[in-house]
Length: 554
Ligand code: GLN
Image (cartoon, rainbow, N blue to C red; front, side, top):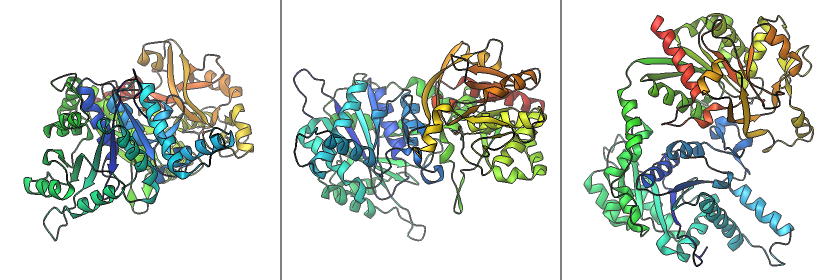
């Protein structure tokens, strides 16, 4: 933990939730990172999830939102995607941890006699492993500043050991650590006043874990007034300048700029005893991007047909956040305003409903698992293929494109994926050889084909034109693949496999030639994980371009 001689003096900002969850800790971390980059620092960000799952890969998306896949294959929380997008960086697996992962490491170390016969205890050995991971992440990135998000809300049983690790780091190096609490100020309709008491309670809870916040981000519907700022400052023992107003916004991309209105970067730098490397905040590119969001007027209407939208009476879009953001970046880049609808796949089991898709300029079927909604998605794909509506299939959306083509163009009526019916007459999507054993042994966690793999593109195709190069690398998360026994047959009937693995044995992209359809393309990988605000993904951009073209003809 100590800064040994000659070792870089690395700084850490811990972001902790107070009052309630879901008020934007991840975006706060991303935005703090962004403004620190704007001050000239090398920044990295870490997410800590306090649950026992070893990673996010085994959780249902309606439970926990999207599973974001890192380049090295680690399956993580969607906040890692926010960090990568805001910071315009690629993060390694060491930047993500859960209680399960930390305990697993400590127990493995104990079994391997790494503690040399000592009694291994929850404290200090668990916090020490947490600290080791945080410091390793910082070193790996050679970061000046590391922003660490502790998931959940202060006072929860499961986050206490992470707070303890943060406290221990502060004791060791008081000048290198700052604490930010993201709080929430309710404004009950009947009371008619923004209330600060929950924030005071949350601060006391944090104090009881030995931590005093340096900054309180006050999330609320509206801006904080002077009176409430002063009240929080006095009762929570924080400098008034450290109370940052964070009202609801239309676009999360405004938040770094809003934080700077309260001079957050200078306040944090002062706490960390750092002098800015750029005197003036340099967020030129970021502001240009935000300008594009605000100036986009002409609409382009896209539907995402999925199955992870509903939870009880609520509709959540968290499960597809990377897809949604990727659509936005390409649309803004083209000067268009994206209007996105979420459609539940099951509804299209009734074929006559597909006519309603006419009002969209483009349709996406994103990644997915299992049987529910499949026949609905296949009806959607048939409709958009026959009616020349731009279609973009992501992972499962590509596999279903192939099944639809096999059924309705090749006439293989029973065509299916082994995931749903391994006994089907024509299993056009089959289990990957490398995956058979995993399923037989019930080895589900972290065992899919995960992370970045290369793809070679075929000349003269939509994909090759979009990327502008022959060799690309994209992130994956799947167990099934196109069955090679059917490739010739599919190609003879007009489907092109425009992207393949370097050995040519794995179909990575399927498309119809542009003369047959303006954009009918699916990828076995997840392009959405590499879309960035200032670097939109070429395939999404090509898809939106063809959607805009269709709209202009309407
Ligand atoms: N269920 C499919 C597979 O495992 C697709 C996965 C996905 O869409 N991410 O191959």
